[in-house]
Amino acid sequence: MKPKILVVDNHPMILKFMTDLLQKEGYQVKSAEDGLSALDVIGSYTPDIMFIDLVMPNISGEKLCRIVRSNPKYRNVFICILSAIAAEQEVDYTQFEANACIAKGPLNKMAQYVLSVLQDARSRSLPTGRGKTIGLDEVYKRHITKELLHSKRHFETIIGNMSQGILELNSDGRIVYVNALGLSLIGVSELALLGTHFSDLFQGEQNHTVRELLRTGLEGPVSLSEDSPLSLNEREITLNLIPVKDEKRVSMIVILDDVSQRRRMKLELIQAQKMKAISTLAGGIAHEFNNALQGITGNLDLLELKIYDQKQVEKFVHPMKSSIERMSSLIDQLLAYAQGGKYQPKLIFLNSIIEDTLRTVQHTLGRHISIEKCLGQDLYSVEADMAQLQMVLLAVLNNAEEAIEGEGKIRIVTKNAEINEKSVKNQFEVRPGPYACICIEDNGKGMDEVTRLRIFEPFFTTKFHGRGFGMAAVYGIVKNHNGWIDISSSAEEGTSICIYLPAAEKFKESKPDIEVFETVLVIEDEEPVLQVTADMLETIGYKVLMARSGRDAVEFVQKYKDQIHAAILDLGLPDMSGSNVFNKLREARAEIKILISSGYALDDPAQEMLNRGADGFLQKPYTLSTLSSKLKELLAKG
Figure: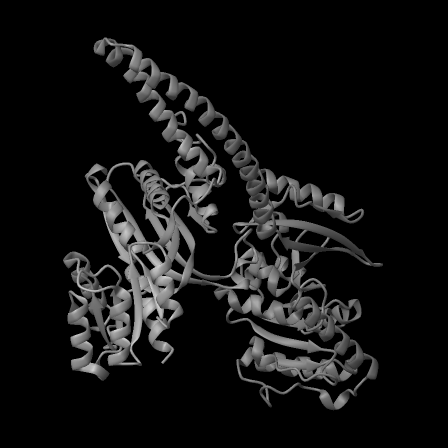
């Protein structure tokens, strides 16, 4: 029995020529006018040999070959390409796993080549000149064909690099072409996608919507707006459908636009505007409440003075004061949410405050919850209010605990983050720069998108009626510190809340490198002050000499001279005035740097010595940071 043959060509004359030729030779022949029709045929008819035109509508010959070869059922089919463009464009048919290629030319010559290839196919021998097109000597280059091929490649390059997904559908809604971005949006390989119905990419009600759009789109362009996008491969997309009609057929161009990012930004903008409006209202309410509470509190204090019966005070007044304290605490949270001010900002090391907070709350967390810490090294410091930052940590930890049902884990991570222009272009009110980041992750039940968008609303909760401003206060405090919050969560997969706070400076939360600096003479008669100043100086790398009187100080300078580089001089010494000590120190060593120190403000004695050449003033009490910067500044002058 002779092999079964399928001829695929969009030219009716070639189809008739091939069918008549092959049937005359006794072959069983079927034909298809394009690649899509061929796929329908081979669904119920398995050919032994296929003759495939290279340039066809509705799936090209090259892509049809690839689809056939990707199916194990057709691995042994002998494929011969029929090429009308062989003279104008080199055809490397081995790349798409065809067995032979015949250039279309004079029909009598084509007949000879076809029968020769059939002989090779039946004997399973390779045609002579493997990889070369048969019959090229019988055809010649055509300028118009070359120009058309160039134009085709030009448009394929443009469409292939567009920032939108482009698909072509036949009149039945089946996919016959898709560009690179379209494949990326859909998430299916080209060979698996071609020939499938476009509406099958969507589920449920959306499938019905797409079918209606396709039906309407055959009459004229239709589109689906950004306000009602479709879901595709976990993305939100809009559709534009444009019919393309010619004398023979109707096809449709589908433009896919991924609007996921735009919609997310739009929702976040709306949410930010909503939160800002609520915070403005919250600030006004807090102000009025505080005024009212002040009146109540003052009158209760007065009332307590008038009531002599202590039992009555304990029974009636104390409960009212307790309620006022509770209300006051709630208003503090309300003010925090309303971004009412950083009350006492100072340089803070995040790792330290996390350790302190965990020591405070760890015993209150359920035993079923384990805490894992991954605290980064060389962390940037931040300028923040410590009490408010602890409120933030407690609120987020409490949220994480409530999200865990049964045994679970909370993981706390700190790290540095360099936020650049590119990474913040889709974030509102976020400035590029260095940030210190705290991430609190739990493996609890997680949140859906609706809950994630509402988590910072006052009194919002998924467990019971709202009882306070926990996460709302977190939002206000972080915003007030010029920071931002990134939340990622999905149902049943836990939640990660990352808080970004701007670095105060490129100052690392690491132990300072100890260098050996110059020798400093500390002149102080108060033993505790003398000792702590010496300890501070040694901590930051200075050698220290300690003088408890003016006379001792002068003797040190006279004895060690060039070895003493600076002196910290207290003005209130018991044996001689500070002014006198200053004079004698400069007489003993003119180059010595003298820093005047006093528990008083910069008054006349200190100012008088500065006028006479003292190098600086240090107000008590001073911090280690202030002491260090003052000395560095002083000694840097040379």
